[in-house]
Length: 267
Image (cartoon, rainbow, N blue to C red):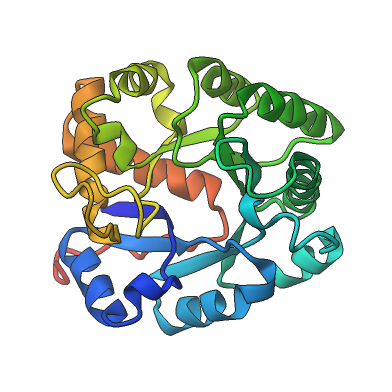
């Protein structure tokens, strides 16, 4: 079993074949998916998809790109939305200094609000961090000092320093198709060194399709391609990395019910 811990099933890229996409994920051994929110104001369509499919859960939050337009959304408002049984995470929130689509103070303000929601609810904060390692580490240390909360660095492509700081602070680290790219040896070196009990895999679909699908639309069925490279990188079997990342997922995403174990008769 594999889990796609981060995808965007509400995006229009999937409007024409969402049912088939879910079926392909199952065929590929991906039994659970978390569809990640990027705008609180557009949360309802994401929730509707999660409600439609038993194997899909979702988060609620504001992507750093949208931090300015959603400035003013309070921790109370987000916390209220997390009460739905299908909402299993907060975010994605964070800092993106590569695109800088929102003022950096708005991004930081939004990140801190989401930290507060994660602290209140105990739900994991899904963190987006790009070209902002120093500020991200500083904010996380400050926020953790106020009271610890669960979190993960999603689609990790930052430096080793942020990865190790995250591990020190109790965070998990999730790898996407970027791990499979030919020029990602430095990232694979980081993945080699991190503790096995802190690793997750994801697609970030429809983006960042892994090799050999690079450049095409990504989808949850491709989670195993990234898992295979992570397994090879760490010198273990695909079965072992699948079991480990799935166990890590359930340890972090505590609101997601574990599937019932199949009996020999049902198998």
